[in-house]
Image (cartoon, rainbow, N blue to C red; front, side, top):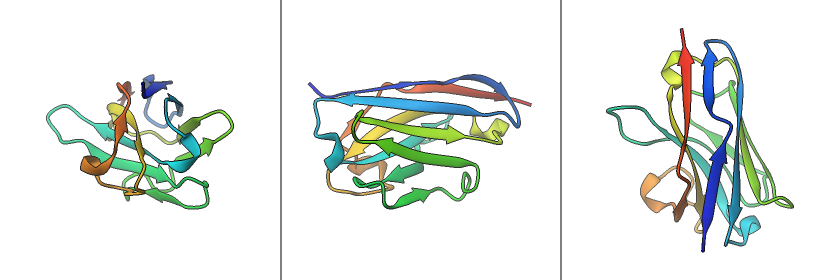
Length: 123
């Protein structure tokens, strides 16, 4: 059974930092592109960041470039999202996702999803 489990969300003041983690099981982790998405109340789920199977290439939404960093540890089957200089508009449920075909930014094409972790940034 495939499982992706996020952790690390919480409440933080604007300008602060959080580090999200996602541990996977049931997949050959090193063969998957991993992504982070987020969904705010009343809005559609949107792409945040992605990293290819080798970790050699990363991709970011314009809204988070320079503030967020995605990384992975294939030995631990984990992917991370370091979030710095957080803004109130970053408030959302953050989801970890896995894409076997390497489609980086499309919500509809990712194969597996975690349950999400809440990030709330206060002003």
